[in-house]
Image 1 (cartoon, rainbow, N blue to C red):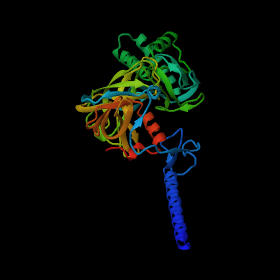
Image 2: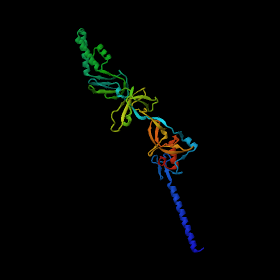
Image 3: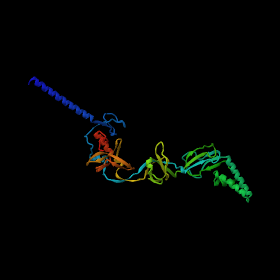
Image 4: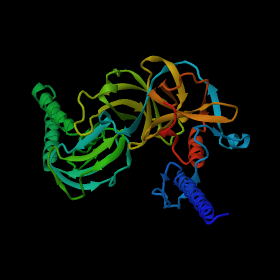
Length: 400
């Protein structure tokens, strides 16, 4: 072999070696680029570079894409552990209802505001803290009042004159007027009888509760001077409470006074309460752009103001279409998707457009054309498994 031929052979060998190395580098680059990283606890976190999870700070683990298809296959044991359940697609009659967050409040219509009916000095307060239950006729406080002493003295004088001149109607009229003034100032029948029998002016008078309830506000202290009309305490009757909720203006258009709604108090095992809507606010709150609605709920003794409640508004209209359980819908920033069954143990994500929903069901407006069976339980686990196996989010590439 001549030197020229030998040099040609060497050049050809070097060229083949360079091509082989270049192809190997391309394959390695493709392999590296196809490797992504995700969090084992939050598979929705996907990164092209190693690092830590922004949610739980765990180290991201590498995930290599296994194929370009959108299908995912599970074994029988995996399906059982993930509680994968499916059902055939069918049209249903869906009655849309709305679940609202509500709250239990005091009913101001059952509030009793106790104020001083005359000027004086509070000598003794029998109930000195809020939250105490009060029954009707229970003593609340003792007050000394010069005005009240003068009225008692006048009453005794008119009683003496009426007894001295029983036939004179003028004294009977003056006696009735004096008695009426005392009653208007809070004198009860027992106090009037004691005044008549003892014929002695009491230096101080006990004020009794005009109603029953719980003390929610206490405004006086012993030794304090009060004037006529000074608020002393507030009683809240808990037999009837308000349940209040917020709705948006477009939702309020379908609501009517006396419409029933079901109320479930969080943490209470007493079941649901049917409450009638008795108030719909005529104006929108300018800060939150919502409208308040409320009803009156009877208290069996376990409800307390401040409790949170769930309110189910009744279905206003019937809609025919495909309805699925809420757990069948995977909601993400890029949209919503479901998982459809494509084989005995294979599943594929499908993007959908949703509509009205209630506490358990949701309408699917589009995206399930030509679909026979859909996953109703375990959809989120399928999404996590897809991300771990494929290294990407199914919402980014599955069918529309």
